Amino acid sequence: MEETSEIEAIGEYDSAVERNEADSYAFDESDINADVISKESRRRDSISRSRALEANAERLEEENSLRKDLASSALGLVKKQVIFCDVVIAIYFIWSMCTGSAIPPEVIIGWLTSCLVEIIGILWVIARSLFPFRDFHRDREGEKQ
Image (tube, rainbow, N blue to C red; front, top):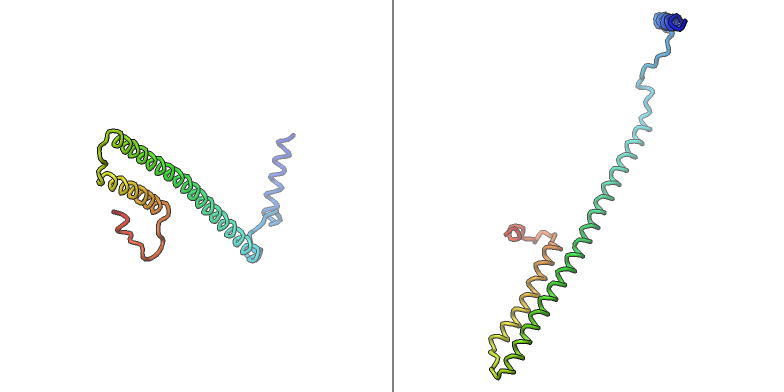
């Protein structure tokens, strides 16, 4: 009995199509509301820009966090290096005084110079790599070498 009702339904649909009474919807350009489409497009563009700005802000925050960690570690290493050099030179001075030998001035000059060069050199390199100059006076070719 179901087969007959299905066949009858198909037949009724075919006859309705022939009489042009079938429920069909033809897309008409007059149905498009340009204002709604424009608003939706602007909304999507706004969301896209907002997401891009948020992603960029997050990336910059992560870079700053990494810079802070790296700078803290580098400063700690410089402190340890200077303390180590000071301890070694203090032991040398004490040993020289105990043995009665004179401390050569070259040793003192070398020690002071090396400490100064270590501090300035290491911190300068770290500062330049962490916070590069972003102006038109920057020597990009010199930085590559």
